Image (tube, rainbow, N blue to C red; front, side, top):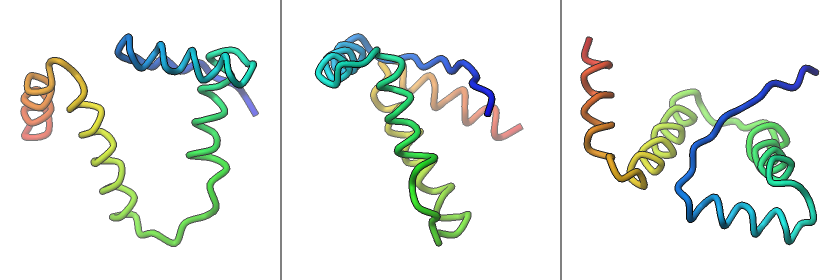
Length: 85
């Protein structure tokens, strides 16, 4: 399996929390993040959820990320404009 890079932008407070969790686990920040992603996405048992349920969960997760961003309203506006086209 090929390993590809992934860039994630986090607020400073969340990055500090990620550093703390990785340090407690005794592994690098990137390794800790990779394990967390793998546990949530890859190692999760097969779901019987419908595609619609999965999309709704994805939308909720995206909304949670946008809500935490200082420019949340500007981002929502840009997304609404893109999807309207």
